[in-house]
Amino acid sequence: MAAVELEWIPETLYNTAISAVVDNYIRSRRDIRSLPENIQFDVYYKLYQQGRLCQLGSEFCELEVFAKVLRALDKRHLLHHCFQALMDHGVKVASVLAYSFSRRCSYIAESDAAVKEKAIQVGFVLGGFLSDAGWYSDAEKVFLSCLQLCTLHDEMLHWFRAVECCVRLLHVRNGNCKYHLGEETFKLAQTYMDKLSKHGQQANKAALYGELCALLFAKSHYDEAYKWCIEAMKEITAGLPVKVVVDVLRQASKACVVKREFKRAEQLIKHAVYLARDHFGSKHPKYSDTLLDYGFYLLNVDNICQSVAIYQAALDIRQSVFGGKNIHVATAHEDLAYSSYVHQYSSGKFDNALFHAERAIGIITHILPEDHLLLASSKRVKALILEEIAIDCHNKETEQRLLQEAHDLHLSSLQLAKKAFGEFNVQTAKHYGNLGRLYQSMRKFKEAEEMHIKAIQIKEQLLGQEDYEVALSVGHLASLYNYDMNQYENAEKLNLRSIAIGKRLFGEGYSGLEYDYRGLIKLYNSIGNYEKVFEYHNVLSNWNRLRDRQYSVTDALEDVNTSPQSAEEVVQSFLISQNVEGPSC
Image (cartoon, rainbow, N blue to C red; front, side):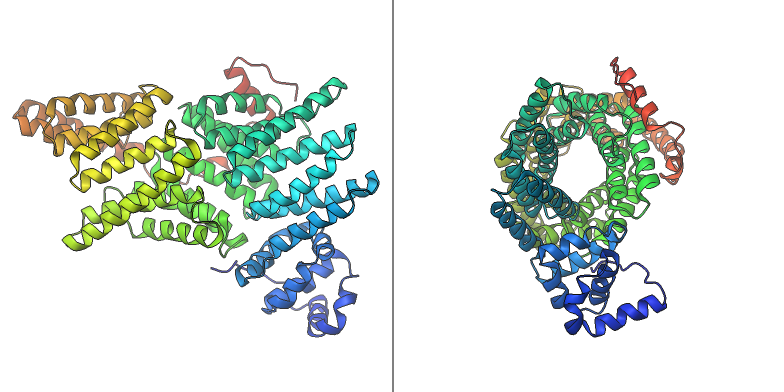
């Protein structure tokens, strides 16, 4: 899908002049480069509109030209359109620019500090744009070149620059799943922080700690992620860029979600959404970032219908800004695929979920290597969907084909996760649990039991015995014992344990309780305990009534149009709840 064009101003005299310049582009090319950056960009955007991508590509592949165009800050959305169109057209403009910048840095290695400082500033802007656009490997190359320039002068200004460079480098390495290198980048940033501290200087650590929180969260080190999100929140002070504040609030909210501190998570993510929309606007990529994390919160508090709507809104923004085969669009497709799968689990209508899962995989495989970790979660989502479609299929041959495809996807996801995280990790455990469910559908019951037990053991050791993830795996093992292995006593204990955890975390109206209640009704029917059958039929009826009252569909964005608190008040409220004193804002 091509990027959606923003509305072009009607044919004013100015636009007529721009069109005339574009009509004479070949003769005017050198003169165009001497125009002010806003006008120069408008000429290039007209080339894009007319589909003259080869000519546009030849301009944008020149570092001096693109660096100047980047200074037209109010045209950034339109620049993303042009840039993505070139990438989709096969013009490797991101790689060309990164290589050109890297070579320039090597040329000026012996130049004076002022020349290097200017190059570093260009690199920060160029790398920032490439990072925002999702071209992480090319952004990484740019930031590494900047970092190399910083190391050539052992003085205070360059230590500050090196810290800033490390923060940016850590962000793109997180985005590209290079977590080991990300950890090294954080340690390097700390060495520069220590140097500054010994000379009585302090660099604000909010962005750095926020990125470390994101890294630890991605690796499922949730306790550590939570600890560092508190440290990041303590660093939020007046005068910090709004982007940094928004990103720290987002990461802290996610850390709270996985720690099941939902009230705190809600306050943080709602303020991040409000702040992003208020400062950047409702069509900005940063606003879509906050919506994805808001959707994550809603999904985890069992507000599934609203999470689907929020994920769709985030995808719409990303498609309008980037379009095409872009990694940001792919991740939004994946999030929407999974929430749609959960939302339609009872109905069995998975067409929409499957569409988004396949779009995510198609985009990622077009951009990244086939063994990239980002594919693990997308393949997992598609496999879950295929399994449910297979179960409802009345054609045995089609059912077996779909189950085998799901099996191949799950195994691929498991191998990618084990390679990245090792055996003893929540993500790996999730893949074992998914294989357990699939083996049950394939009627390989002993293999299913083995996978479920392995998933439970890993999750219990990492998350404790009362976590939501543990409850999911316990419920799946109960289903296996109940429906296929006739181990009713074990199944009953597991169902009751799953119910207890679900109620404690989410309350009496939790959606997952339905499957445990239905499982117990079937179990008690099987062993002839009709008194219990009657009891749980009543429990299920009460649950249905509670769901109808509890989850009437409303607009999830209604209560984030305004915020009763300032960012400083939100931060202080969070820190006070942790019995931590933050800096004065």
